[in-house]
Length: 244
Image (cartoon, rainbow, N blue to C red; front, side):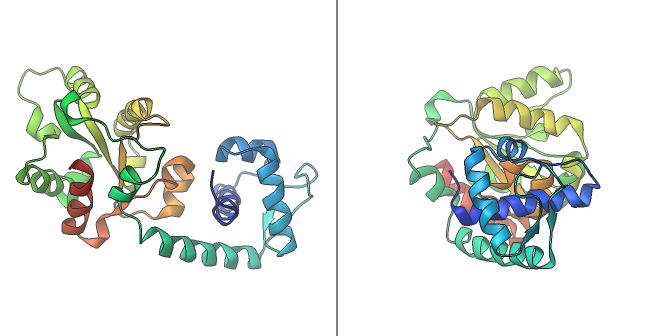
C-alpha cells in the first residue's frame, strides 16, 4: 500500500497524463482506484487533501465535472516527485529484493539463466549490448538474443524458454520499447511470472522518466528502476547485488 504522499503523487500524475492525452471523459474515484490498485476510500481521502491544498478543481465525487490540475497542483506534483526521488535514491535493487518482506529471491538452482533481457532492437547499440556483455563478463548467465539464438532456432520457442528459465527479467524501458509490440509482449510474459511474493522484473529507464513510464504503466512506474543515464557501471553494480 503506497503512503499518503505517494498516493497523492500518483493521483496528480494520473490527472496530468489524462490532461496530456486530451481525454475529456470524466474520471470518478472508482476508476482511479482501479487504475492505481488501491481502494476507493483511499482515493477519496487523498482527493480531500488535494482539494484542501488547492491542487485540483473538481466536483468532490468527480461525477459532475472532469477533475483538473491547478497551477498549484502542478507545482505540488514537482515537489512530491523531488521528495520521492530523494527517498528512492537511498534504495537499491538489493534492499528491495532482500529487505522488503513481500519479496522472495528466486533460487538460482531452479533456473538455466540468471536474467532475461527484454528490450527494443533500437536500444541495442546505445545500451543493451554493452549491458549484456558487462554482465556476462562478471559470470552472470544472461539470456540475450545475440548470445542465445543461432541459425535455425525458433524465435518464439527460444524466447519463451528464456523467460521461463531465467531468475529475473531486466526490462529496458525506453521510447522505442513503448512503441514496439514485441518487447511489450515479452514484458507481459514476465509480468505473468511476477507475483506478489516473488518479484522478477528489474526495470532500467533509458531516455525516459517516471512521468513517461507512468503514462504507459502506473505499476511499472512504481517499481524502483536503475537509470541508464547514471552510467553502465552503476547499473551493473546495482544488478550484481540482486544476482548474488
